Each structure stands twice: as structure tokens, then as C-alpha cells.
Length: 103
Image 1 (tube, rainbow, N blue to C red):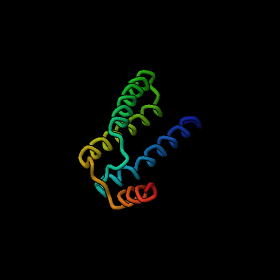
Image 2 (image 1 turned 60 degrees about the horizontal axis):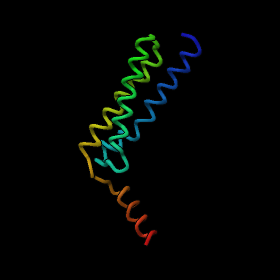
Image 3 (image 1 turned 90 degrees about the horizontal axis):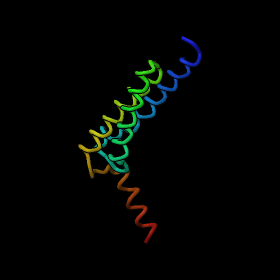
Image 4 (image 1 turned 135 degrees about the vertical axis):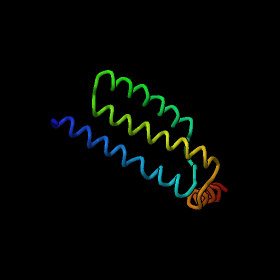
């Protein structure tokens, strides 16, 4: 493996780690506040096309990162729909604080 591939796989690992807080919050708190399911569906669709492109050019790093994106966005959409319109105490407090500051 060469340096560009190593850097690419490190970047892929960072992408995977970046999704963890969002997924963890969704599953643990049953809170979908601030999540746009439409945006994540579009992101999923974009990842499908990028994955196909990566597979066609046989780019292991790009294939890997798109597999991570596909899995993570799929999980987020499933749980965001499952917990639609549910809000945790933390986000509820933020909404209440915003309303108090406006009035």
C-alpha cells in the first residue's frame, strides 16, 4: 500500500468516526431533532452513484468511503424516521431557550 492509499483509508476512518455521534444520539436518545431525512436520502443517493463510479474505476479507498457513507446514511434515515418528531431533553431545552430569547 502506498502513501496516498494510506491517507485515503485514514480519511475513510475519520468519515466513519464522524458519523458515530449522530447515530449514537439517535439510537440512545430517540431524538430526531435537527435531522433532515430528505437531505440524508439525497446524500444516500449521491453515495450510490459515487460507489458505482468507484467500483467501475476500481478505487479501493473510494469504494470504502462510499460503503461507510451508504451504511451510515441508511442507519440515520431509518432511525430518524423511527423517532420522527421525538426530541430529547437537551434539544427541548435549546428550543425553549431560543423561544425565551425571542420573546
